[in-house]
Image 1 (cartoon, rainbow, N blue to C red):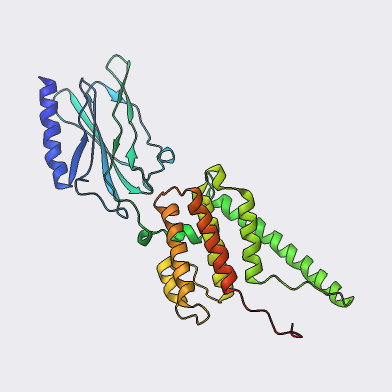
Image 2: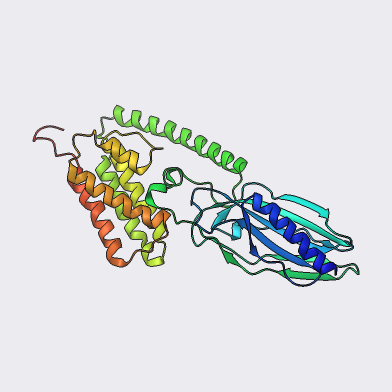
Length: 322
């Protein structure tokens, strides 16, 4: 009889969830100790750039309890949860209790799957009762190049496990080291100037890009299966070259906005812009849509980078001029 009443209560909660546009994803498990999961309705595919709600609901006897459980989203790379879950616990019927944990999840990258969730209860005699749900997938649209995360592409990420205070301390040390290097460089420059020594001219943007590209190819990242890292690095080399070569300082622009800005650069003809657009779009599909390129595609993207550098480098100065 208690189990029937509990199911009625869960049904009533289901009507309440309907007002929140939640649907039952994992039904209540059988027995005195039950776990069910509800999520935002994904019948018509949820948009990639919107968060959604997931509720974990526990139903158990009033003389029992549940052990605190934590969903570690470091082990669920397809979703992010910035806040602690909202917890609600209250009696439902005579001899029963219900607890709810509400999460706001943000999609990161496919496949969008919630793994099995395990909850451990303590019955009235102090014995452990473990209930594990089934994993399930969310119907979420995959990201497209137009939905790219330019902040991730343009700005360095905090290394995993590094707290903000540790990062600030590291930056302070780096700043101090940079200051020492600048002082040493200044002293060396004065020494060279005093002895009339020839100072090697700084590298041009083209030479920097060629040097970085050769160093990247020597790492053989595609052979190690690190396709996303390879495409991030090669697109970063070309973008840095464009900014230095044509004096375009727009680090926070999206690829589309960046290409639009380059239309005002007279040195770039239409063939250059078309080649650049194809290059960056191909990189976006690997970085943000999770595509896995084959060997011919990797060779093509490398050739496209070399071609763009070779055809846009400044012409050599006339004879007799530095």
